[in-house]
Amino acid sequence: MPLMGWNKKHSGTGSRAWPVLAAGLVTCLPISSPTLAADDADTAGERLFSQCTTCHEIGEGARHKIGPHLDGIIGRLAGSMDGFRYSMAMREAGESGLVWDRDTLDTYLQKPSDFITGNRMSFRGMSDQRDRATLIEWMSTMSLNVPGSLVEEGDAKASGPARGFADIVLAMEGDADYGAYLAGECVTCHQASGHADGIPSIVGLPRAYFITALFEYKTNIRTNEVMKLRVANLENEEIAALAAYFSGLEPQ
Image 1 (tube, one colour):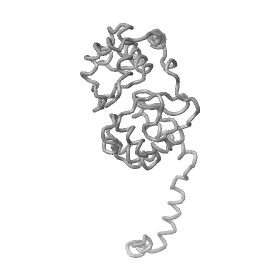
Image 2: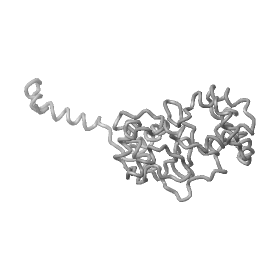
Image 3: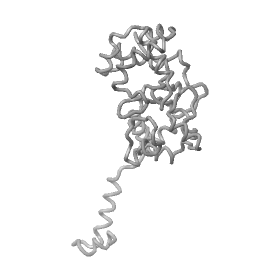
Image 4: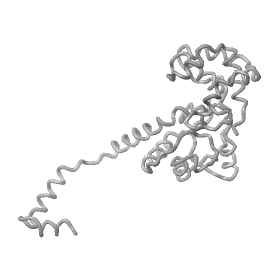
């Protein structure tokens, strides 16, 4: 029933009450600001993407991490980025013609394991449709697709002492066979198949990122007590060997 009819029937003042009420609403309702709305959307998108930053980067200077960088994701063929070892399931999806647009990203983000069975993304999914739309829109604005945005292997990002130590190991040629011998302790948590079930996959991880990440755990740039204990006593030769071994594996 229209609100005016409700006033006439139930209020003692009849229809005269509605102009007064309407005037009050006009003065009390906030005046929307397009700039503020855009800022809020940017903040919300960045906050939502914080769930992704362990594995992905986006924008100028983006590089592969545990997952591929997401610069230029809109319009990209699935499983097609050079320099990243995709799961067989993701490569097959791309070969079958899957292109990342807003609709396919929305469906994928809802539950990645259902949309592409066998992919190794450990993210369990984002159930709220509005959150997915906000995140995808933010990614589309941040996705600059800058030519040459993928940082070369020798230029892995790090800071402080981690960068200096990582540079030393990056210059070494790791022994992959020795890395296979050392890997037994790693695969007690990280699945040797490359599947991710709550713990990120390290199979096929770019060598430079692998080395830099281990030194960031050693120097407390990254804080994870389990990883810190695991890497604390690793020698440079051992880190180089593990990086050579895991970077050379193909995800199953």
